Length: 259
Length: 165
Image (cartoon, rainbow over all chains, first blue to last red; front, side, top):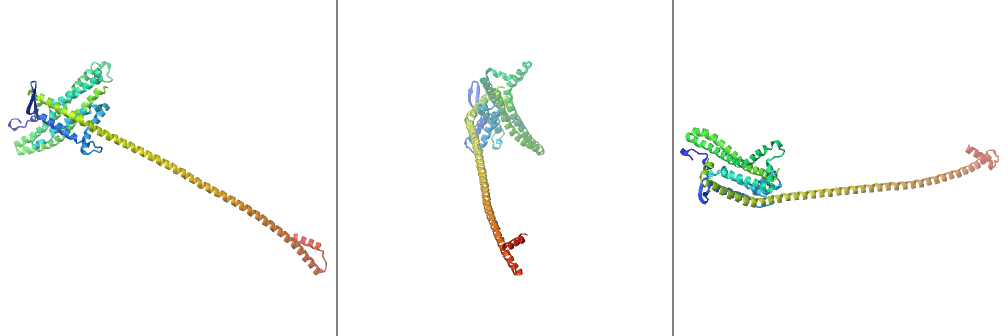
C-alpha cells in the first residue's frame, strides 16, 4: 500500500521474506511467501492425487476426477508425440498440475479468511525456471537421440536451396525464443489479470472514499466487471497451464520425432 | 514491478529458484514419477478389461448366431424330410388305391362278362323253349281249329319264321 491509502496494484506481487535459512555464496536463501504457496500447492496436489490412488476397476467420483486430469495429459502426449511420449508424461503432467494449482491458488478468495494469497506464477523467476527446464529437456533429448543431426530441425522440409542462407537463421531464432515466450506468456497473463482485478478493486475503494454517489456510480459497474473478470481469470489460469504443457509437448515432439 | 525491482534484494532470486526446485522436484518425483504411472496403469488395465469383455461378448454373440443358424438349418432339413415323408405316404396310398381299384374293376368286369354270358345262355335256352312250346301250341291250335295234323317239324319251321321274321 502506497501513501495516502491509495491501492498499489503491484504490491500483491511482492515476495515477502518470512524467515532466513542459509547462505549460498553471497546469496541468502529465505523462506518466503512464494515458497509457502508453492509448498501449499504441492501438498494440495498430493492430497488430490491420493484420492485417485484407490485403483478401483469401477472408479468413484474422486478417482474419476484424478483420472480425468491424467487422461487429459496422457491423451495430449499421445496425440502430439505418439507412443514414445509416454516416457515424458510424468514431467508434462507435473508441470501442468503444478502451474494449474499455483494459478488457481493465486485466484482463490482466501482473502475472505484473512489469508493473503500470492500468485507464484506471476514471477518470471518461477516461470523462467520452468521454461528453461522444459527447454533443457528438449535440448538434451534432441541431442541424445539424434546427435548433431538434431540441427536439421532448423532446415524444414521442402526448403528451396536458394533460401538456405535465410530459413535456418529464422528457424534458429524462433527456436531460441521458445523459452522466453514460454516463460513470459504465463508470467504476463497472470500479472495482467491480477493487476486488472486490483485496479477495479481500487476504483471501488477510491470512489467510496470520494463520495457515496460516486462510489455507487463507479463501484457497482466495477464490481460487475470484476465478477466477470474473475471468471475469465479462472479460464486463463486453466488455459495458461494447458498452453505451457501443450507447447512443452510440441517442443518435445520436435526433439523426439525429428521431422 | 516487484518482479523486477526485487532482483535488487540478494535473497530474492536465490530463494525463488531454491524453492521452485524443491517443490517442483517434489511434485515431479512423488506425483509425476510415483503416482501418475500407477493411475495410468489402472486406467490401462480398465481399458484392456473393457476391450477383452467386449471381445468375449462379441464371440459369444457370434457363437449364438452360429448356433441359431445351425438350428435353423436343422429344422429346415427336418421340415423338408417330413414333407417328403408325407408326400411319399400320399403317393403310396394313391398307388395302392389305384391298384385295388383296378383289381376290383377287373373282378367286376369278369363278373359282368360271366353274368352276360349266363344271361345270353338263359336267353338262348329260353328262346329254344319258347320255340318248341310255340310249335307245340301252334300244332295244337291248328289241330283244334282245322283238324289237320301238322308235323312237328313243319310247326317248328313256321314258328321259327314268325319269331325271327
